[in-house]
Length: 196
Image (cartoon, rainbow, N blue to C red; front, side, top):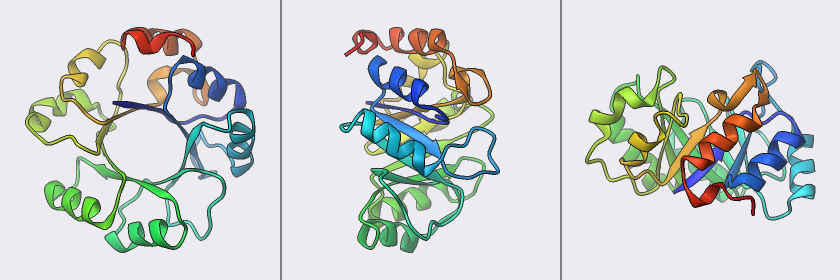
């Protein structure tokens, strides 16, 4: 299981998250979102941690991409969009599916068939309430997001997702991570909490 810490807006939070065990750092590239970053921030993270995996989070189809490893399509997109990012832009893809939409199973299948590296199932009201619905789902290449924190993590890990995405639950204020909350989160994952 991989952990993605999203909504990173500064190098200090990226550095601490990576040292504590984050597998992927998410930087939102939409200036209209409060916890946004920039392509320059991604470049600085990659310079500081060349091995780091960084996702550029897009709320619209990007025309070009930078140094990010993943392009996260955080909007209603098509299999053709996925294929374009993979084949033309040469990036890995995280496809987000809002669990409030219809035809979720069909979307998962079409996105996986189009080449998404991960499907991120999101409920901004809290993914924990979706646990009964997700039980029994094959979670290979499937991740979960939505108000995940150290208090509900153990229950959600029982779903065996390939990816867990956390963001606002690790903040002390919008756009600034709390190192204490990051510590609590990784400690609840066990050995991963040790600084590498």
